[in-house]
Image 1 (spheres, rainbow, N blue to C red):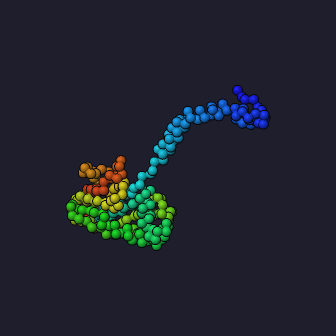
Image 2 (cartoon, helix red, strand yellow):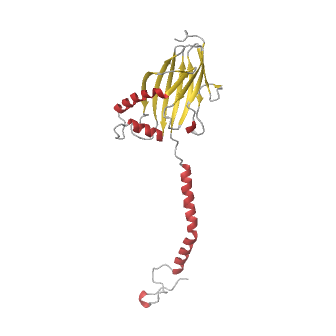
Image 3 (cartoon, rainbow, N blue to C red):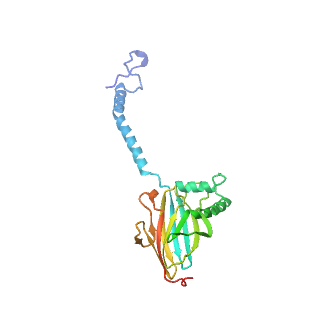
Amino acid sequence: MYLAEVDPGDSTDPSVQKRGETPLFLWYVFITMTRRIQPLLLSVSLLTLSLLAGAHQPFPSYIQHDARLTVSPRNLDLAIRLTGFNGEAKRLRRAIDSNGDGRISPTELTAFSRECESWRPQINAAWNGKTLRWTTLYPASIELNGDDVVSASPLSANLFFFARTPHGNEAKLTVEDRLFGEAPAVITWEADTKPGVSAIVADASGETVKPPYSTASANIAEASRTVEFHIRIESRTQGE
């Protein structure tokens, strides 16, 4: 029930509603309802934030290692492509940006490419247990994929090494990739051959598999960095 509208000057009774004011019982209803639904509003807000957080999980930060071994009767060529993603990409870009201005110049890119060639000792190899030493085949190359600033945008480094094929018609070539050993990794190995040579990749148990062989696992930080190539050279005069 609304209180009677009267002239404010006609009464000093505080219970009498003045013209244009909201009825007292409506204020009472509003305050009561607000108190009752406040817990519900809080629950809905928390649920919404939880759903939004779950829908936008951070992308994984890792380095993709794609390695291809080409075997010929005279040479072993090893090409490795390293691609950084997200946090690892930003870390690599920051390493290239030597002056720290947030932008990668052609001079900085050239200097880092030369530095990449010093990574060669981090690729260990053994032919039938005997250490195999790599030599740089081509200068390393860096691909910024059109983004020359320090960011989480992917970038790739391409490395090219070779070694003379040792004597022996059959061999087990073991290669260990220790590049960026502290970073999570997804590693793939692939074998290619020239005429007169056969090569297959063996998994961690020694069982042979068809290339390419991927060591990527559910936990990318646990990817295996060592692989075995079973090589058979049928002729040392073909394919050269």
